Length: 310
Image 1: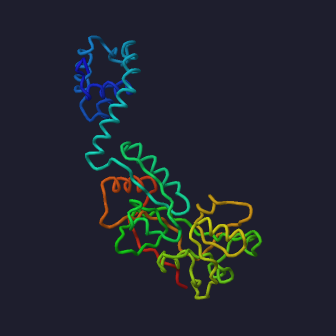
Image 2: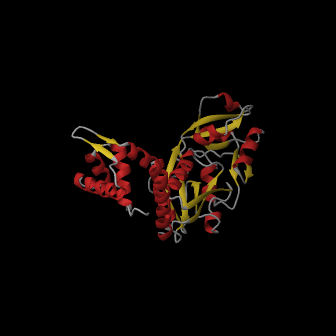
Image 3: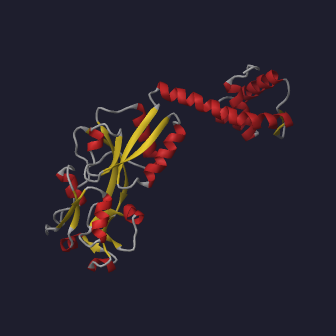
């Protein structure tokens, strides 16, 4: 910059222009009020004119200060972005972060992606759909850096966390099914409805959690068709071939005229978790996990029972 103004002077000017109060500007900049005055005097000296009118009662931009502010804001934002991108690259935050999801990307996930990209513009996030029937394969194979999957997760090679979006279960059934007109059913009544089952290679314990083979009281639950994707399961449900257990948010997202969603009591809540290779933590992945935790109110990984015992 020809006038030799440094980054801190420009930052001080912008903050003071917003606050119009030397004390508050100092608090935001973590410096004393005197330091704010010093930085401003230095900048005004470089420019050769006053940018603020100061009295004992008020601080206001001069006409030149107004013009300087209008030109500086976009230039400063661009410069700050370049600096942040360089910092990200130095910390291994550049490049692309690929996050898998099953069926639909939870609203908390998409909000976290937006917040992460605002904070780290040098790192692009790609959301990649993974099969319902293979929640862990894309992570193990390196096709994605991490995946948002339904709990439970009991994979020694995978790290789990945060856990978020705990929601009650609903049963999706065709509008022609006897349950369709009900306001709710108990888990024991699942013995009267075949359930859609995620196919392999999902591990048996995970498939059992999504479509229990017995009720909490031990009554057998009929097996419906095995499916690879969420859409296959919803289609089978609409056709009247079986019911399908879904969390409340997924049910709301897939609302349609030929399917009824009936709340189920007596089952553990559905929950989502971010999983990654235990040996594959990167700075950008750790940063995304922190943002996801902040946005969703997520918690550390915790054991989740497959089904409540009667």
